Image (cartoon, one colour):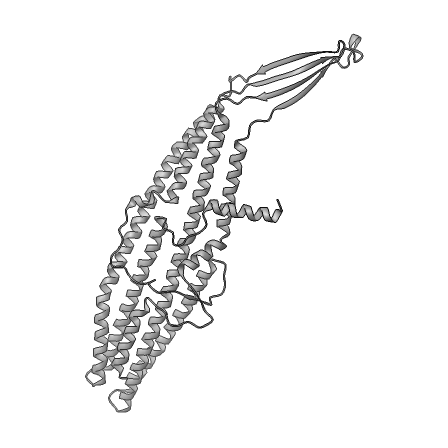
Length: 437
């Protein structure tokens, strides 16, 4: 095969290198991006901790709905003393049953507050899940890009070795100097070094990906088909897309919880009476008499005014915090969209440049084979092609990393997982089986 035909085959391989990888060893296990996400979600301690937090809040709802316990009391009077009270003849015993009566719908308001706080915990579970998915998506894209970079450098090394072999033949017949052969050898050695560095970077990227699910081995194959391809157009997004996601849901729930806390503090300003009823036994006459009493605190000093003012200020603070978070998320989304658009346009522009550089390289290599071009022309054309290929890969990688950021901010789920309620039910069932209840 001639030199320029080999270059043509290598160029075709480079175009496919962005979207596919070379055949793996049989020991490697293929793992897709969604499978990697599922592994991380299944092995995440923080996600399990968030689920346990939701279980805590469910228990709090139950506790807040409990009624106040009654009080049973006993009093013994005149059981000893002086004069006529020396013995037990004048002893009086009173047994009472007391119940504090909550006014202002306090129990219902406490339960409502607990439900709002439980809603915060569930929204935070979704936020944590999105964060994990986001980390896996970016780590997977970076690993795929590292693999594509290795493929590109391997193809470039093939071309450089062919160029070096062609130049050495020209040196043997006196068409080029030893300096040309030495230059070609140095360039080949440099390409080998860059390839080894890229392979180490690939190993590091795969190790970083495996570390997300607690793994330490990198004996898996990345499924790269379509991972580094570009769509026909960039999907438009709007700043309002963040409003329906779990991030904002957390702050909506926080604001609702602060409002519920304010209503509860207002109710706490209402004084609760205590009703007592009982029986009194007179030892002297062996008679029994009924007794009853009612007591209610007087709101002379503590009217809960401070707590009400504090709760009202918390509502205001929560509202402004929500607005600030909304602005930040919207700004981040539009920045990610702008970065994606920039990367998309750059990658599209480089496609034309890449084809022109490939054609120029093939032409100059053909001319060198015919003696019409020097080795410096060949190296210049090859360096230009390698530079454009690196820029193209970088632009495509930035496009997909920006897409991962957009997926995170718009709450796009990349794989189906167990919902919080279902997960809790499963966990409770497992706990029941373990405890034997």
